[in-house]
Length: 588
Image (cartoon, rainbow, N blue to C red; front, side):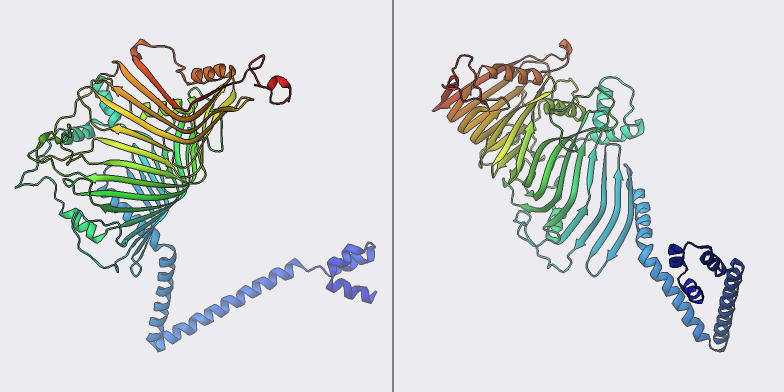
């Protein structure tokens, strides 16, 4: 019994687990601590701590009385601790709040907020966090950002038209989680309100008066004594910062709001952008702005708009966030724009007529090169979403277009068109998706390296209106359908060109000219293709009821020119191939 008491004293829980007699339980109860004794011990401990602290404080006070330097030392230590805590935990937030207050005094449009800011003078760095800028038309958000100024790079003076792209970058910017969301165009909607005689709701009358006062000012014209555009700022700025490098991590560009069924998103995991300047295409201009970008895991998505309450149109295929229009593992962007010069005095017709081949207008465009893993998807549903987004951001005013005036001598030149070119550098796939009674059908195409797409968007209006040109080529095209017999078209090269002419008045006759040229083309024809393409055209046609107020007459012109063309028909009893069988009826 004595041994059992000793074991219970040191290991009461273990003894309770394997013992079941009453004696053992009695022994455990005898060794339970008294709550009153514990409370008394805690009070005694607290009393001792308080006495020791009081004694320590008294000794410090005596030391300070005997030698004041000890007091100064203690005070400096306390201040240093408080300052260190402030610098580590609160300084960046306080500076961010101060910078936010200062910027709000100068920024009259929208609201801005900076969560925190840190400065490193040795490395020339500025670090921001939680940047938010919101206006009535768009918002811009960044999780955190780093701006580094390389002040140690030597300053080199160069001419305005020289090539600066090979210089060292002095400014480097890194943005983590940037998001640009464009959801409105208040000024455009305000002009429509004025045209249609509606009460102004988009822009207040006071703000609208300021905008009109600026827009009604006469356009200044440059003379020899008074130049219109002082380029000294550009020259000194380019010499100081010849190249700007910008890195974007997990960037998003969003277009849309709750008034449209789908929102257009451009996402990328990483993008490396470099801005510089090059010599202009024409000697009359100053220089050319150039932005080179390399993007990884780029995707263009049509996603459902949150809080949309209208009629929903289901997409033929839903992938993750939405309908993926374009995806590529790696894409190269090249954006260029001439900084326009002045119209020469001896050729006032240069802007519109472009009669002098030695002096072309300023150029403006975007080149896109798609590398590995490129997939394109389109179709009737995607085109309807594009149409609704276009009508929302570019609403029609139903007014007669104004012919672009000729440039006066001494006025600024401007670009005639915006050129877009998309080039495929490796094998890519293109899918045309449509639905028939909630069943997804597709035309699947595979194209090889060298395929391209070009689009010219006019930026001027002539006497007969304006024209849009689309040009492209598919190399080693292999097209198939979602039918049981999949073969459709094989071609070594397949070129297409579309020219659309729009008149000055919106509801006048339009002309659409489509040309198709192919080389070594093989077309597999089935009677089932008749119903297949009929369903495609039916899905692509307008779902709204005919309306004479929106009717626009137009004429389509088709031209087909094929070299070494092969037309293949499958001729059995029912003009059909049973791919699941090896029956002789499948023979041609």
